[in-house]
Picture 1: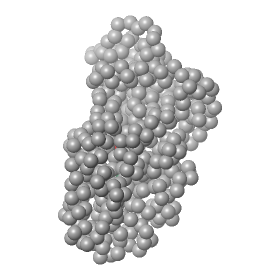
Picture 2: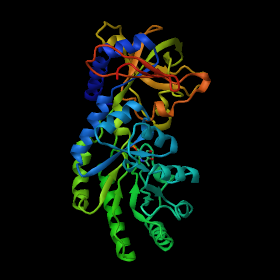
Picture 3: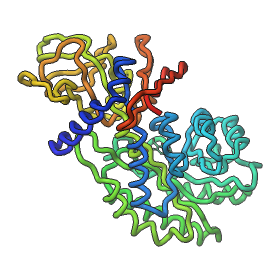
Picture 4: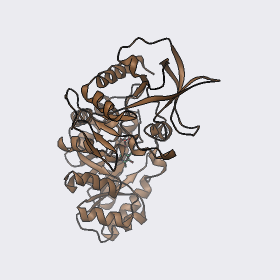
Length: 410
Ligand SMILES: Cc1ncc(COP(=O)(O)O)c(C=O)c1O
């Protein structure tokens, strides 16, 4: 943990919870509640663009498939990366042209490909012969990217164990595609999610460029696309390489090729991790053999799904304390979710003041892979999302009954 980062998160969370919009949303909906700031999404996107201005960023919708996020990014000119027909539908609902959308799931239902093609999507990813065959007879302007695998044991999610091929198999797929008249335009990879290793990222780019060059010579073709995937890390409870540091490491490797290659990235987490703050209430307190336990009204089967799936260590702040109230002595506490399941533990060693039932607790950096991976275990409903904008005086509330999603401020 880094006390400087945690102090920053404390101040940011206190500032958010002091806004009229956050207060209004909490008064209206109670807890649990996710507060979403589209401005923070825009800020991250602008930082990415400034760091790598020649890269075409496609937001990986899977990280947080929320209308406010899509609208904020679309308004700033961002493109989109979808993994399913459902994600494509969400993006298309915003009137986004299909030439701003790529489909990067290496395994797709044939009907999903047909539907995406009918919608005008033209860039797809494959990593095996069966998937390649699904594109025989596809429109001539369809372009495929072959997904490469780079082992990333230090990433929180090493995606190379499930998807991607090595250089030999990649070359074989290019050969088969050429023989069948299918257009392979280039290559994609994903270095692994939450990978705090700029050198590993840069090495993956260098290795891919070398492979592209070798295959161009071997097959007498010219590739036009390099997709460097996602993976940019978010600072949860410890600092990580910033967008600027990663950009500075990648820029010299990528920029010399920008005049001849379309360079794509698919960032998810880095764009949305910081845009949501979860506010919960204490619903129960127990003294156990290992100390005090607080039970919250959201847990790992809900918005804290990132704890189990991604080993995220969420920060847990007592709101009373954040807002300046005097608090008693602190103690190490265990923070658990509301379900009847023993794995539903959010934090094992949280330093908290004494809390009472009904007290609010807040966790920042809860935007990525949280709401989208939450379940309805124990019959619980999904935590609503309230869109808040700093400095805006009154909420205009609209409830979407499907998602129980709430716009406190447009
Ligand atoms: C194909 C693909 N692209 C992009 C992403 C987004 O990755 P991240 O959130 O690490 O930036 C993922 C995440 O799993 C992915 O599978």
